[in-house]
Image (cartoon, rainbow, N blue to C red):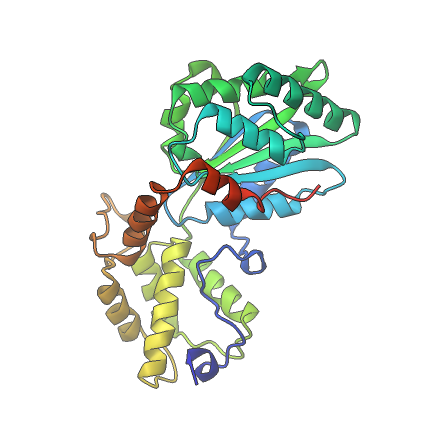
Length: 320
C-alpha cells in the first residue's frame, strides 16, 4: 500500500509536472487566457505574461497552445533552458517549428526562408504564433533585435507572426535592451498568486481529478497550505504531496493543520500570510526544496550544449 491507496486516490494529485489534464482555471488564469487568445486572434504582435517562480506560467503556455485550433493556427512552443543560446540558433529553431525545411546557416537566407514560410501560412488562412517559455533567459540586445526584426515581417493587412513571452518579471528589463521592441508590446499581464479561496478550489480540483472520493485535508489544513505556500501553485503541490505522504506514514485518516505545519517547517517554508498581504516578504531559506531544485537544474543546464537542446526540444512543437 502507498499513500494513493491509503487515501483512495487513482493517481498522484499534486505532481509538479505540467499535466494539461490537471489545469486549474483560476480567475487570474482565465483572465490571462482571454487576453492571450485575443492577441493571437487579432495578430497583435508581441505579448508578455510574467509571474513569479512556480506561478503556473508553463502550464498556462501549454494550455494556450492546446487551445489554439490547428485549422486556424500554425503554433509552436519553444522552451528556453539555457541562457547561452545565440540569435542564429533561436531563429533556426523558430523556423523549424513553423515548418521551414532545411533552414539555412546564413542569416539573410534564413530570414528569407522564414518570410516565405510565414507568407505561405498567411495565404493558407492560418496565423503563425510562437510561444516562448522561460523567456527571461533571453537577455542580450542581439536577441531582442532579432525579435524586433521578426515582428517587422508583415503584409499590408496584418503582422505575419505573433510572439508571446512567458517568464519571470526580468523579461521587462530584457526588453529595455532594445527600446523599439519594448514599444511593440501589445499586451502584458501578470499572473498573481492564488487567493485563499482559489487555493482551496485548486486543491479540491486536483484531488477530484485524481479520483478522490473524500476530502483528506481539513478546512484548517487548507488554510495552512495557503499561508505557507503564499498561493504559489508549485509550492502548494509540494506541500500537499508531502503532507499526504506523511499522513500515510502516520496512518492519519485526515491531514490536519498540525501536519501541514510540521511538513512546511521540514521543507523550510515560512509561515504567515500570503505574499500579497505581507508588507515585505522574505525569500525562503536556501534549504527550501523548490529553490534548491531550481538551482540544481540551472547548474545542469550550464553543461548542456545547443545540440542537446535541439534534441530535447524536437518534440515540443505542436504538430501541424
